[in-house]
Length: 69
Image (tube, rainbow, N blue to C red; front, side, top):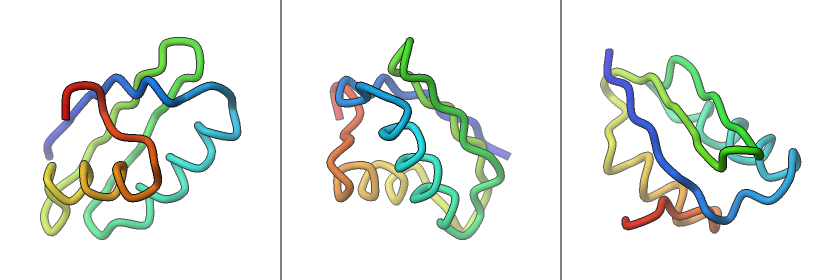
């Protein structure tokens, strides 16, 4: 299992958190997604076939790009 953490500056409320969690959870191989509107941070636990590249691409696609990515 792999774990990644990202700062997501675009998170402003719990609706944002829900959107991110539901979208990322649909990726095959994603074990869990935790997100916080307070810290603007997400933590994703995943294994193949999911990849960090696929997760970042999806975050960008749903308009929540990670800081610095």
